Structure formats: structure tokens, C-alpha cells
Image 1 (cartoon, helix red, strand yellow):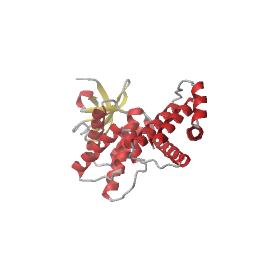
Image 2: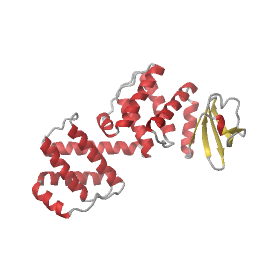
Image 3: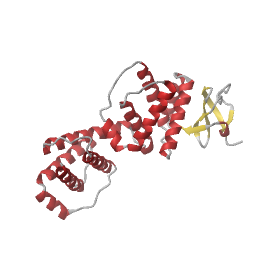
Image 4: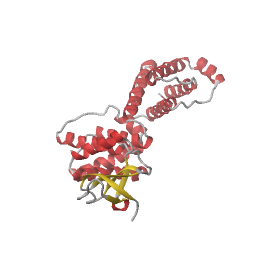
Length: 280
């Protein structure tokens, strides 16, 4: 029979919130699983086709509100999409995606129906930095088009990819956006200081994005690269322009992230910038 839970609330015919003393509150999904169910009824985990746990009370409330105001068929379709993401990424997703992406997609579907256009300023960067997430997001947009005959603007692929990346790294969307803004600011500084315009389609731009992204991640997670005192002196003497620009970039990072940046980042940035100027 499987583990028996107690029904807390049937959100619609296909979604039930139940609980027990070990699992806390569990969302159970299955055709007709919520029909005629009321608080206090018992329910077997085996009755559900899919399950996920929402341990955050605020997210449980958000999810309940969300489902109350959406068409049950749409919720069922969006749940299928989230489980599709999990299978494509081949790793568990943070539970918050069930609230965040369901909310985002249901609103995006309404917005697309109203023909409201918008752009995603970091679309190219998102595609470069999160290639697999971007590919899966593309597949999701195609699924929505097939099912609902709704064409999303291209920028929407980027937003969905961000939600996927957020769910596999357990990082907030606002932090990811903050990092993209910081990368854009640093690229602007590089172009200005080296008097160059970097072609976004160029492989070197992609490498620069990857390097800046990893550097920001290291600073955020307090990972320190090895000390290279001899290298510091050589780089300072040989490539003064790139070395001084690296310090500028590191100061911008420190200010935006509100964290100290290890000096070794300056050295690796200097090497990368020098390589970039040689290629250009």
C-alpha cells in the first residue's frame, strides 16, 4: 500500500497537500487524486503519480494561492514541464522551482496572450553561461507552443533557463541577475580601458564571460586561488595596462558583491585580458 499520509487540503482534483510526522508537507499529484478528499482523510503515497516536498511554509501558501487562481489543466501541464526539466537535467531540482516557475510560466502565458513584448538584456550571456539549461528552456517553449499555440518571445527562453539554473544550483534568481549585471559592467570597463569593441559572437567573448563568471562565483563562495608572488611582479612589469585594469575590475567586484577579493584573481584576470588583447 505504501506510506500513508493525512490529507491537509485538496487544491483541485489532481493536486493534494498531505503530511506526516517525518515528511512534513508533501504535494501529491495524480489524476483524480483530490476528488472528494477532505482534511483528515488518509491517502497512500502510491496513489500519487508524482510527489514533491515544500518545506518552506511561505512557499506552501504561495503554491496554494497560485493553484486556486489557475486552470487545473494548466497546472497539470506546468507540473509535467517541471518533471520534464528534472529528467532532462538528470538531477534533482530545488523545491522552489514548483512555485517560482509555475508562477512565472502562468504569468508569461497570460502576457503572451495579451501580446505584451519585452526583451531580456542578458539573453546572449545566459545562453553562453548555461548552455544545457538554455537548450532545455528552448524545448519547453516548443512544448508550450505545441500544447497552447502560444509563441513566446525569444527573451523568455533566457528567463526559463535562469529558473532552471536557479533550481539546480539552489541560488536565487535575483543573485543570478546581480551577477549578470556585474559581468556587463566589467565587460564595459574592459572595452573602455582597452579601447576595443568585443564581438559577442566571437569565441573570445564567450571565454571572457566564462572567466568572469567563475571569478565571481569564487569570490561569492570564498574560494581562494593559490598565491603567486613571482607571477605578480612579472605581470605588473610586462603587462601594466592589463594589470591595472584587473585591479579596477576587482574593485568593482568587491563593491558589487560586498566581499573581499583575493589578489590572485587580479593575476588570472591580467593573463586573460592580455590573451584577449593579443587575439584582437
